Image (tube, rainbow, N blue to C red; front, side):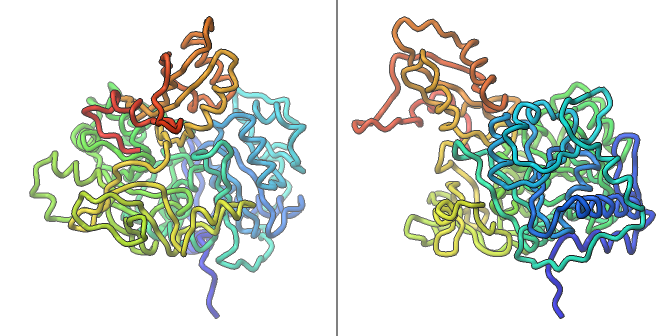
Length: 530
């Protein structure tokens, strides 16, 4: 009898073969695979006794701690789906996601309960479980996580559940291209195949010590939450990105692998401690989220000795669909050419399916590095669809192909390289920002007549949102007050960092806004990739 493909089975394997191996290090705490398995199972039993059943949804808003890892396994092995929440979102966004996702319960870190307190009465949650955090307190009515699992014996077995590989494992919400986040339905099979790609192409080994620099809520840590367990490697948790602390962990914990957006690389290489740090382990680092500049990749390799691996994907594809395969022949090229190659998105991974760049008629572009087309993909890692949004699913998946909206070229060796975005999406520090969402808020301000939000280059974040504003006559609003208005009504990372006041915005004869003309002055001499 064939068994369903599910990454949950890798926990069983790890416990079977590596029971005394250190599975998780979280600051001063550490757990063996046997202990980690017991804690995850106790969470499953406690959730089952609280009424969580196969097919239910449980939201989780926790940073990169052992509690987040336990939630991935404890919730999903019940046949329930986990809804990982971005704790940087506004209360309004969180309210929408939790209600739209039909979340039955919420597990939340005590440091992030403030927005939940604000919206609690508007949520249809049956129960809230709070992870206590030293130095924080909350008025939120909920049960303590440790108390919740304490009543369950350490040897308790979770209920046996028949899992279909095509059923929902996680429901991951985008924060990207529309004013309302979309729920991406990722199955057990899609997560399994993506994690297999993670293991193979990032060369995950049993002796690896993996640092969770990348938020686990972001596309399930790109699959790292599953892949590291599969290899019986060690998870090292990181509550927040703190460059000096990360550099210390490189030395003190012998970190050998990590993932992160280009902005994290930038923070690491520019930290004063970087020049003093010799990293004996020469960690491999996968980067994605926004195409990294070749110069940044070169700096990461020169300053820190990181072995950079460029990957590409989207939440809708679990997320990996391309990686920049490194060939021995590249090693004879000058360092700057090597970095330029590593900045390309690359080729298909072994297990994800087919990815290519196509013209409007669906035919593949020439492999000449010049003809522009859209990246499309199909196969093992594509989402099941958008939750409760069949029309948006049909827009995204056409004739069996998922359309990414990313415009790219294909080089003669088959390597794909993004050149532009089909939509005016801003990617700042690896976070997606919808320009139309920000514009929608700004249009609500009484002093604003017209507005456009664009991406401009930024040394730290890669790019940041800028608002170009036409004020009403006699309006007295300033850049500072407008930024504060946005920060009060949006997640802070979405708020414009720069505001320019103009007399008018460039438009076509039919009134269509020409954002490319606004971007031109900022991106001259720089490579605009999204």
